[in-house]
Length: 82
Image (cartoon, rainbow, N blue to C red; front, side, top):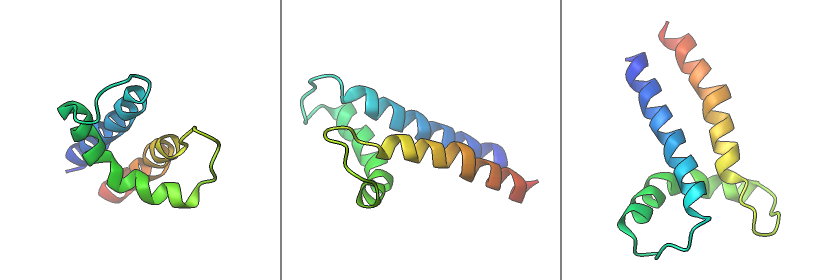
C-alpha cells in the first residue's frame, strides 16, 4: 500500500514538473498531452495560487506543491503506514 501511494505521489510530482517545463514552449492550448497534464495538476495548483503572492509572470504554485509533497506528505504517509 505504501509503495502504491508513494508511486502515485511520485507520478504527480513528475506531472507538475512536466507542466512547468511545458510552459517554456509555445504549444497549442489544444495539444492533447498538454491538456492531460493540465487537467491532472490544476486541481492542486489552482487552490495554491489563491494563497501565494504574485511575482509577475512567475508561478510559484508548482514549486510549493512539489515541496509540500516531497517534504511533508510523503514522510507523513511513510510514518502512518509503517
